[in-house]
Length: 91
Image 1 (cartoon, rainbow, N blue to C red):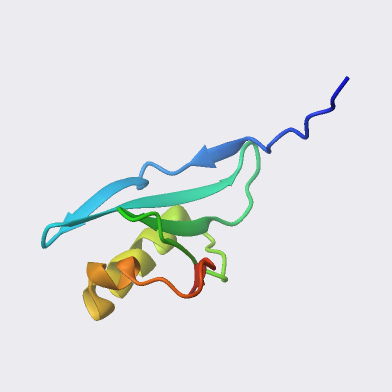
Image 2 (tube, helix red, strand yellow; image 1 turned 90 degrees about the horizontal axis):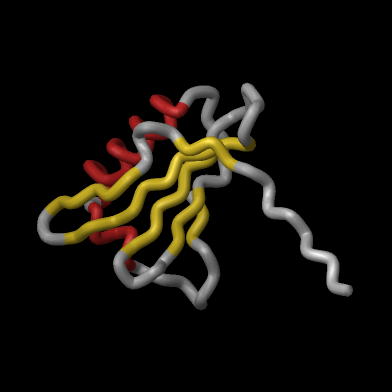
């Protein structure tokens, strides 16, 4: 018999979803452990499966969404396509 480790259930924000700008589409995922009032995690996944994860957590899902928008405005959505040595990018 093999024991499987259960993945924690997550609550995904209504702000999560696809974001497109200038022909580049990324998946924005804002989540926290389900059933908690914990802080939110922000993760962006590019079309080429480059994963960018923010090290800091956010008190609200709106704070996380606004940080994504500010980063996309400042650095461009294409910045999420860049990959460093097969490691998730941290912001």
